[in-house]
Image (cartoon, one colour):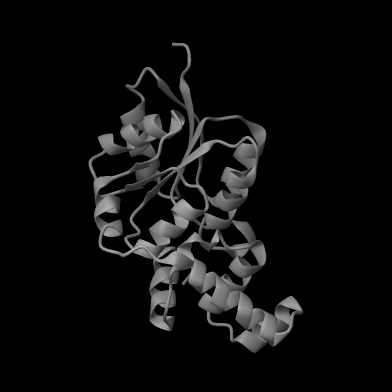
Length: 214
């Protein structure tokens, strides 16, 4: 069939990848061209082949000892051109979901929604549209829009600081490790939290736990 949607699937759970494979194999307009079990494998796969849509979990082991795929997806979405991204997740933190949208993720599907929702998401983003599954929409509708979320995605340095802080390092320890001033680290940490809509340390811990940082 002409104009097939070529898809790469990434998830560290074999059962999830098998389920996605089973769901999509009956679709004549969709073809899985690669699978990855972690972010390192996903990065290598995306360097080696071309696809239209990446379907990825975010809580996966991989790059630089990290526990999630957000940094890789952010870098991927900065490329020109780049494939569309559908995040397949169990995360239900509203500001995390908003953060994914802010870095350019076109589709977000909650794993608790009906399986067919993933097909809808793949077809929608391949056509240049956005798609949020019912569970995701319900979560986002409970939160009032916050002006600070329009300030853009985190920089690489802000994300680096955020990850280290979430894992328990103090500001002065991060400053020593990254060879920056404590003032700079504090500013980058506050900026990262603001862009994610996280107001308290509790929000930060909850967010970090949901995406697999801690």
